[in-house]
Amino acid sequence: MANWKSGVCLLLILGLLCGCSDKDKSNKTEVPASQETGEKYEAPPFATSPFDETAAEGENGVLLDTSHVTLGYVAVSASASGKLKFQVVSGDEKYNYDLPSDGTPVSYVLQNGSGTYQFRVMKNTTGNQYTQIYRQEVEVELQDEFQPYLRPSQFVDYDENSQCVKKAAELVQTADSELQAVSAVFQYICDTVAYDKDKARTVAAGYLPDPDETLETGRGICFDYAALAAAMLRSQGIPTKMIFGYVSPNEIYHAWNMFYTEESGWVTVEYKVDSSTWERLDPTFSANGADSTFVGDGTNYADVYVY
Image (cartoon, rainbow, N blue to C red; front, top):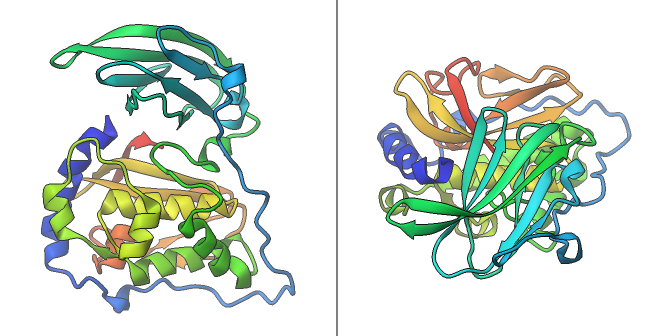
């Protein structure tokens, strides 16, 4: 599971970042001049991922809400003694998450798009052994492929009152387009958040980021950078993935983002944004002065988990 491995990412990336300035402004984003359209970017209504207890089904203390799967997420609440896991299975893809056992509702994205999903809640028995306490299979037909990446989730945690959401809304006020909105958010993160080497050394397994905390402290690890970028962009209606995977040539386990717009023409660091396709953003490397060995055309990035 990606959040188990995030500590590996942080320790490996430390060696790269130790030799870099926290704020190397020579690596700033190149943003195109305004197209002077006379129109400003207007974010769509805020997208949420609520848990609907009245629509939920379950047993053994588990309540599973699948009433919003067309919107790209599933929500679950569970009350039990001991540790719980929530598993999302679609085809050959399997995602395992830590699930709160105190009844706190949590939402999870449906990464594989439309299709058959199995949802399983498992309870720890002994050591690393778990037993299934609830299972449900659901046929999912998404409204569109972007729905999972427009909403809050366990890994990208925010709401309409979050400070990162308010800051994102402020940043995009002068944007003429989606791409200008992306560039404003991306540049702000690169300019204000520094890599936290101490946190990288001490972060515990199962760590989950708090985008507002990253915004407030101005420090974070790759998981924090990616979660903050995703929260800010999603809140402004721009589909944004948070991805864990490996970056060559050193096979660093790392977190970054991809976003989608129908526009073209924006260049960030060394890679070009093409029209009508998902494009890659790496705020951790960009903010901390990594060279094009690590921030290039995307061919050295190997996606493993998507959130």
